Amino acid sequence: MTTKKQFNSFDEMLSDSDVPVLVDFYAEWCGPCQMMGPILEQVNTQLKDRLRIVKIDTEKYTELASQYEIYALPTLVLFKQGQPVDRIEGVLQTPQLVQRLQGLL
Image (cartoon, rainbow, N blue to C red):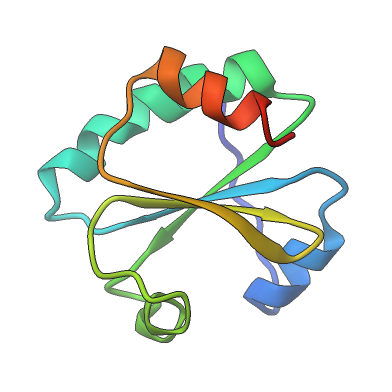
């Protein structure tokens, strides 16, 4: 289950997290992005105490998309201690995504 939470800034959200943050950069019109929703719910269930998942709409937050050079959707970026440590472009199924993330958490 994802939760909605307000932050003053993206950097504040990253620095306030006590676990790594997986950011899903997406757009409403993006078909593959819609496919990632249920996959991320399953990943969240399996890794809930070790990871926080955040969705960022690239249409609303164009400056963040530019800052992190998001050119393909969906793009997942894993942040640890506020720094990007891994990047995944496109759709990965739950087992592959969990396996990749477990090696980094």
